[in-house]
Each structure stands twice: as C-alpha cells, then as structure tokens.
Length: 160
Image (cartoon, rainbow, N blue to C red; front, side, top):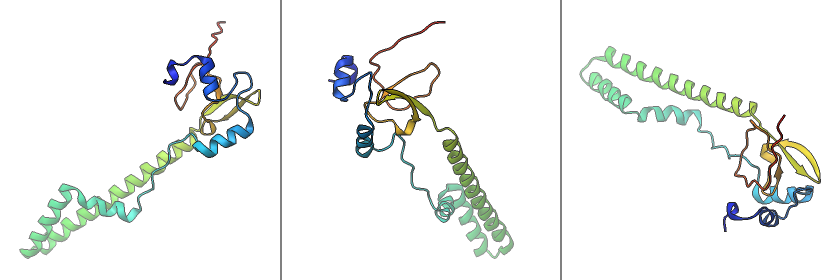
C-alpha cells in the first residue's frame, strides 16, 4: 500500500516515529548512513580540455573546418587561416561561457541552502534541508520551500 493510502498512525508506525518526539539523534544518524543526505548528487564536472574538443562536434564547425581544408588545398592560405582563427575563437568563447554558467550555478546552489523545521528528540529544531531523513516530523510553514516527498499526517491552520 502506498504511503498516501495509509492513515497517519500507519505512516508513523512505518517510519518508527512518534509525532510528539520525532526521531532520536541515533536514529537520524542511522538513517543518514543508510539513505545519505537529502540532495541531488553533483554530476562529475567535464574537464576544460574536453569541453574545448566537444565544440568541434558542432555541425557548423565541421562545415567550416571542411571549408578551411578545401581553401588550403586550393592554395588560399590566408582565407583558410582566417577560418581556422574564427573556429578557434568560437571554441574558446564557448568554453568560457560554459565555465561561467557552471560557476554561477554553483554559487546559486551555495546561496540557496534551504532550512527545515523538524521535531527531533521532542524539541523543535531548525536544520539544513539536506539533513532531512525519512521519518522526520517536519513543521511546514506557509510560503516555505520544501524538498523530498511528504506525507502530511496532521495539520492545524491558525488564523489571525
């Protein structure tokens, strides 16, 4: 049976947690060991030289390379050198732009480290969202940003 089909008691029992106490520190550590951190694993970064070589796979670059080789074969050395320079500049600019985009994404990821409010060891705590584990009792707030899939086992709306 899927989690959304269970009662709140069944969900709490499945995750071996109580609503009032939340998870213990030991249980959190065990689940972190088993599940890992609540984050998307980073892709391995492509080396700069590989990015440079990949720019030559572009169809337009291949056409320009063929044109430069034909020009060279016809004895038009200056035209072929100009085409080679254009191809080289295009590749360098492409690599620089890609590296800038990667570093911007890394900086953005570092800036937006979301937090979560949970109940652990019977107390309300604020933790990094990457430290959430299955079974955590998360205190949701309006306008909050939440990662992972959730099962809401209880709610209370307080109006001013």
